[in-house]
Length: 260
Ligand code: MLT
Image (cartoon, rainbow, N blue to C red; front, side, top):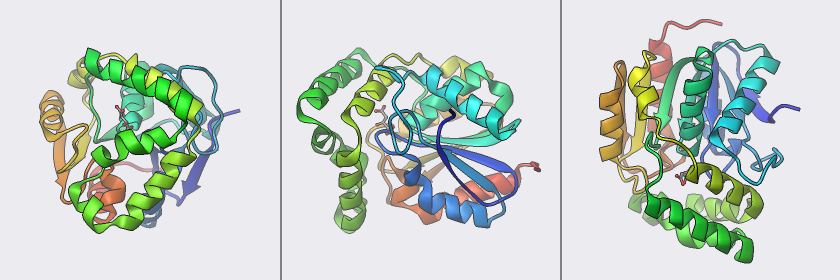
């Protein structure tokens, strides 16, 4: 069985890879608008999230990239434009390393090509212990305030509340497996520096997790790339400011000479 996914629209294929600890539903507002602009949008659920099942104690980035490749094979898609946000970006780096032929262009959002520092890795293992004891509530307490921009926290209570529900609703075993996978992921800066693919970096101006300094470094590594910064958004730039995010995505997609 391949990864479950949501699909909308018709035209050149665009695959959207979601962040931790969310699911394909984080792309709902983006998928609809991108589809209306003339594209087929496919957004899979990564292991243990949304409608997908959990496969292992560790959801490694390479395993998830293989799952995405198998999904594309099952749909008869030879290559697509990929967008990955944060953990979705980590999966995209692995896909780029293992199966570059499946990618025609990339949008890397609020992510980092570097591996974890020792301190960050340690933080993930502590979070896993707490997840096992206290359940998914701990994700709200330890992560959410850091992910959203100050603007979102002050002005978009509905979004913050929806995310609280999403975080609480996620399976703690799936979250722990993804945290183990992220802790073990390798440095991907070498793969980025070698690619010739057209690449767009999109970052929230107030992303406290994967900040603009890292975004500029990655943008400098890639030969054919551009960095766009989204105002009033933090780490979840696609949901915090969907209007600007969608405009940038569609502008980039229209600039590529792609066809079905
Ligand atoms: C995400 O937003 O996907 C994760 O928070 C990324 C991470 O923990 O490195």
